[in-house]
Amino acid sequence: MSANLIPASPDTAPDRRRRFLDNRILPPVLGAANGLAMVAAAGALPAAPLPLLVRIGGFALAFGLAGRFGIPAIAAFSAARTTINPVQINRASTLVTTGVFARSRNPMYVGLTGLVAALAFALGNAWLLAAPLLYAAYLGRYQIQPEERAMAARFGADYAAYRQRVRRWL
Image (cartoon, rainbow, N blue to C red; front, side, top):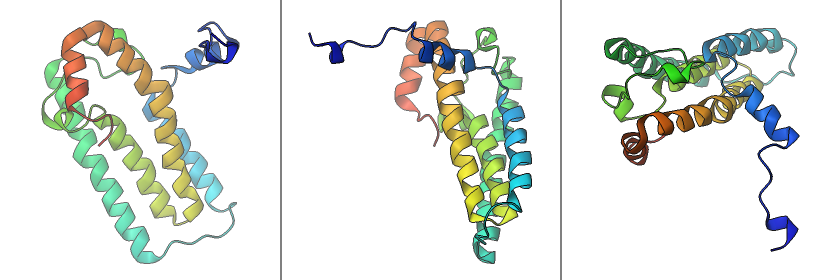
């Protein structure tokens, strides 16, 4: 076997850095920080105004998406009496698979990303539309992937079947 086909050791320095970031920052806190950075950057970025109809339509769609997925997801976790804290994944007591969780495995993150996107549209600078994309990418790598590993370990075949049935995002 040639050296370039050997998988990297999980103990490499870049991998340790990635694991260090896994589940460290509460997604709502990161979303709020993202929002503050967007507000600060809005005036500093080169002008790239979005047309008014794009701003209004994008805001309405993104904000509606946030409400349609985020609020019912929080209510479902509350009803199931399972933790909503994404940093303490090991405290999950129930695999919620109904309601909005039958449409997305991560409706709370869909909602949070929708809020970040809504702010980008409200601020009206096209450059800011990169922020929700970067936020979603960060969540995917440092929040969702570790959660999926933990859920697979905790709920086994039930989670594997759920994962086959339902998309990660939408």
